[in-house]
Image (cartoon, rainbow, N blue to C red; front, side, top):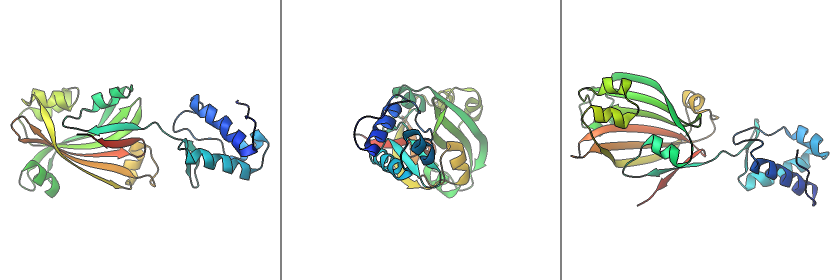
Length: 236
């Protein structure tokens, strides 16, 4: 337990909590003790604790959620929107270990937006892969990937390690991003559950179209990222 530094009570409490957060105790995303517990620890009124927490929130070190408490701010991963985007490479650039979980792999009828992006007729059969992406075990992306019915791709998606390897097995040696459309909205209940975020925290959304070396569309993707855990960066 850190000893408060000299100064006004709320500044001393803020300094003590700031030092503990910097040391990783508590870790990112962890809930801080309740105001009453902190007031007892520092032998001050709850209003003084509230001042200290407000200062830390203003610095971006904690997040105060009405009705839930105060939480240590999470590490932010910059996702660079470039010509080539590979999940594992992105996560490893932040010194995190990538992993994922397949939520669904199926053949479905193309909805209008999917059909337009892939250049197919509405209702045409497409391959859908839904994945939850993790960095050091923490959810950072929820993606739906739609592919035209490329020979061998559905079987490759079931066995290959990653989408790039599956596309390579289906004869697509390389692919690049043609376009990205970014938006934001509040999560649905299932999205919030999978990404482990409150329903009040916005999602960043990105609709991506990827093409092969000949310019043919090989994937349409819808990605959802939890803010502020992930931020999108555009570079030339």
